[in-house]
Structures are given as structure tokens and as C-alpha cells.
Image (cartoon, rainbow, N blue to C red; front, side, top):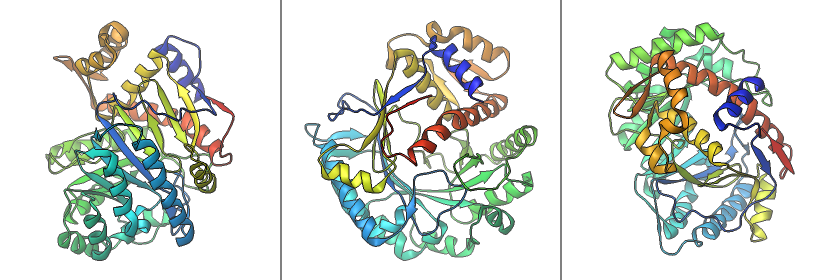
Length: 417
């Protein structure tokens, strides 16, 4: 898998140099001139640890959580105070872990953010199905949360069993959501599980929209090497057929496709912490993307708190982009939305997209992966699948390696990808 990603990287960056992450960082972050800046906050605590989940998480204890939140708020102030006045940002997302375990402190965190940033497109928070109660929903809505994403994974017992999750009470979720409405209610599902069929996934999506969702996200199962999951990945041909079938079903139902994996029943319903030109990340494992650098915070809660206590940023690793590397990163994540606008690319980099990647665009059209109209390149169903297929290679060759190391070392010296 690393051969495919390495060859692609070398071709698109026109260089044999790998992405190099070093144990260094800038104490002053140059985000003042970053337009369309997003914010992300990571809450790493869970009541139970799911074997398939690759994200940075630890078992919840109130004492540790409170110590972590105190440090998190300090990090927000350290970074936010580097900009004179309030910096406009598009959005703020809370991920985890299970942010609802810190529901009573979300308002403190949001208030700290608002001292330094103006959030224009709402505040989102990820929730476990067990969190969907009127009391929790009231608390987070009063704190300022306008969008929620519920990690259902599947409503069906057979797949909950495979994933080691408990049953989901759909009627109770529907009742709670009807009492406390949100601008966007997204529900996440995993597809390509062993034995999963189109009818299984269709039933989950139908149940989601019947239970109060106006947005769904259908993420592929990825077998990370460092998790303890024993779930077997679905073969490529079956996965391709399943993705095409469920995509066509959603489009036939009139749902709006806002990214490779997401569909909404209302056009204004959006939930994505990923497709941002720039973003600042706060908390353990949170990442920051600026014009010419990408950095990632330590995965260790204890080391995170210690670093913040010393008045330093909790950055573990930083990479400095070449222009071509930054272009590849931009195109990869912009394409997640299923579209790339040549005008936006030129505005961002100051050069035409065709000048930099004209040959690749022609090849993608020739192979039926994209269509182009008025400078906007859109993925076909075939293109969307192969984006997913390549993302799986990328995830296992790059993210799997990096996260696997960072789960063991708080501050690695260097990682080459």
C-alpha cells in the first residue's frame, strides 16, 4: 500500500522527498491572514473504549477530565491572544472521545473561544447514542451548540454486536430530538462491515431520517493496525457495489450529497469538520493546518497538561510544506466535497489549476473519474469510489503509521511518510 501512496505523492509533488514531520513547532502561529479558518476541539474521554475506533481517547475519570479541560482552556487563550481583536472563523467542532462527558464545561470552553474568535457558521459536537437525553441536549444547546453528530454506526443488533456496541434505542432518540431541536442533526454509520448488504444500510439510513436526522454520514470501515478490532474488511468489489447502490438510493430520494460520504434531507443541513482551507486544533491529537505548515498535538493527556502548564504549545510534530505538497493536501481534502473549483485553487495558490495539473485532469476525465464544467470538476460515481479506495491506501500508509507511533510516544523525534 505504501508503494501506491509513495508513487502518487512523488508524481503529484514532482519530488521524491517524503512528508517529514519533526519534533518542532512555532510558539506563535501565523493564522491572522488565513481566511475560511475552522476551529476544532478534542475531548478524548470515553466511558467505554470501542475496539474499532482509531481516535485518541482514554477512559473517563472526572478528576482527569477537569484537569484536561483546565489545560484546554489555557491553550485556547495562549493561541487566541496571539491575534489582535477577534479573528473570524467559519465553525467550531467538538470531537472525541465523547464530548458529552464534559457537557457541563462546554460553555466554559465556548466562552474562552468567543473571547478570541467569531464563529459564523455554528458550533457542532459529536455525541454517543447514550448521550441523547433531554438533559444532555439541553445542556449543550444552552452552551451554544447548534449542530450535533451522533455516532450510531448501525441501528441493527447484528452489526452493533460485531462492533462491540450496545443496542441503540431509536424511539428514545427520536423523542429527545423532537423536544430539543438542533440546526443540524447528523447520524454516522459504518459501511462495508462483514455481511452488510444494501438493504441493511438502506434500513439504517431510513431509520436515521425517521428518527430526527436531517443529515447522515456513511463512513467506510478501515482496519487500523494498532486497534484491537477483529472485524474483517469487505472485499473491494463488494464495497464498490455497496457504495454505488447506497449513493444512488440517496440521490434518488432527493437527498443532497455534500461530500463523498454525506447526504442531507435539507440543503442547509451540513456537518463536516474536515473540509476547511485552514484550521486550528485544540486538545490532545488535534491538528492545525496553516498556509505552509501542518502540526499535530501530543496524544498523551498527561504530557499535554504538563506542556500547557509550562506555558508551551502541546505540539508533538510539525511538517513544513513545499508549495507542491501544499497543493496536494489542498486538492485531496477539497475533493472530499466531490468538487474542485479551479477558481478557488487559483485564488489560493496564485496559479491556474490546469497549469499545475492539466495532464492529471485530462486523464481523470478520460477514465471517467470526473466531469468538468465552467472550471468546476465534479466526481462521478466511479471517481467517488476510487477516491475512497485511494483514501484507504492513504489512511493505512500515512495516518495508521503516524497515529500508531504517537499513541506510544508523546513527542517522537521524527516521522517520515
